Amino acid sequence: MSNSRYVVSLSPHIRYGRTIRGMILTTMIALAPSVIWGVFTFGFNALLYVALGVFGAVGMEFLLNKITRRPISIGDGHAALVGLMVAMLVPAGVPWWVVFDGAVLAILIGKMPYGPLGGAPLSPALVGLLIMVVSCPNEFAKNVYPINAPETRIEGVAPAESPQTAVRIDPSDAGDYRISDLFLGRQVGPIGTVSPMLLLLGGLFLIWRRVSRWRGPAGFIAGMLLSGAVAHAVDPGLYPPVLFQLFTGIAMFGAFFLCTEWTSTPVTPWGLFLFGFMAGLLTIILRLSGLPYGRVPFAIMIMSLATPLFDRITPTPFGKVVRHA
Image (cartoon, rainbow, N blue to C red; front, side, top):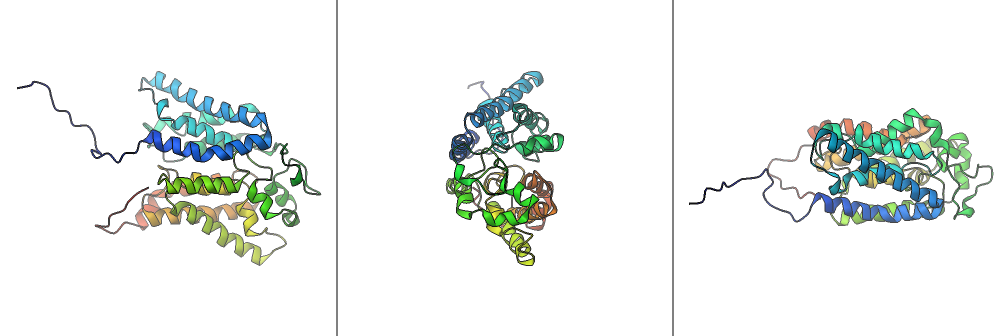
């Protein structure tokens, strides 16, 4: 009789055929067109910032693995994804250290203190980004005019001024922007979020691949559309049209890549929809209140803190089989 022991590992014991590394790689593939468009729009500087973000996040996770004597975890690609997202959410005109520090802090404060992957209650990328927004808000006003989209210049608006900034200064400027230009990515904004069309295609790709669940993005967009439409109906001269709100800033990125975060969003299907809806509603409120930067990240992070509540008030019926993405 063999003396070898039969060791049973931790659950789950049934393989679904999908790995964390594969899901992260799929997410990066979905983000790739938006990154490429950002580099095409803003030039080599944007590519440098993407590299800095990835290097800062991966380097910090590797260093913390060594210091804490944990297994090296950078192979799953999550740190690289966090760094990529931080870089995509900053304007191309910020100093290089804003990107690097944001990526480092995302890992140092937003991810590693909570143990292995899946333990963080908030999106690490949002944690790093918002720390930098609060610490140096003036740096986030330093946009760069798109070098490959000169037709986006609006009379009376500074060349490197984002649509959201222009409208905050003068609400009447909203009528000078063509919605089709905004949707296609002919605008000023963060490196990886200037093309809502590419973000939409990437998000739909993730839903099709069952990496993301559709209720988060659907709820976020519904919340923005409803609250934005009400505000515009109340005072069209003061509050911009709802599609302007949806296709500027990082709204589409928030809908498809932040409201679908695996660990900081509700588990229940309708809890996730309610999460997204409230985040979209709060985004419009923060924009209309005059908060200059970080409206979408703040809205989603606040809702992430309420994730246990959303799960509690929208329980899955006992015995119902739910097929997760």
